Image 1: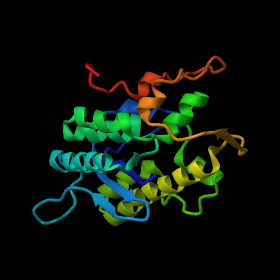
Image 2: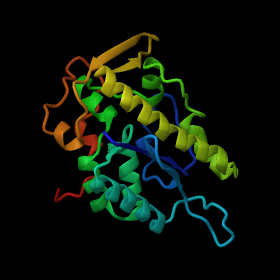
Image 3: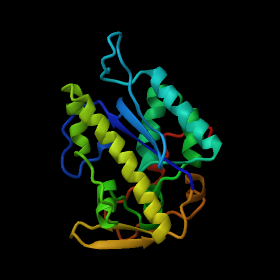
Image 4: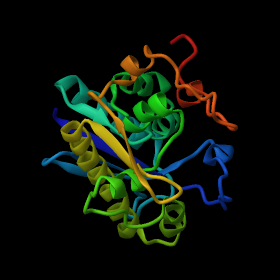
Length: 234
């Protein structure tokens, strides 16, 4: 598989309380994004003003350029991937580009290992948790909630390095999933557990599978929350 992972950081600043769903503060605006072809081209995406200074928010034009790039690479045969990219990254790229239809076209054919895991187990896991459990040597450079403040403070390179690193880590985890045929994660009790993954599936394939068994859970996350942003006619 020729992997191309992507990631975004938002520019909206707010205080996220413990266990609070970030989607409460939606819609989100993007500060910067990254695309990383495994063992290939790496790009940072953001908008600038007339003096070449990064803007606080990515422009509609830049977001559309990012979508067009992802779609062109997907059409070339690259496996477009993102960790929780279905619910989060692609939704907000589409929103900022004002082009949800193109975002949908990419989303349905993309690979989102977190969504695949959710559909098997019924709950989400973080990129950091999977990276630690799968012994990925590269680690996240900061906490995602800090990125908007750093961007607003003018620490652009720090955030660029962070968003680039998350795309790189996603590629590393994906390759390990393919090799091991499982996803591992660190539980809240600091135990390492794993879930078999015979093969990576596209979002379209996952949506054909049965919904996860959440009968044992007090608080359920409905599967449709991951894709309820799809255009209604889809």
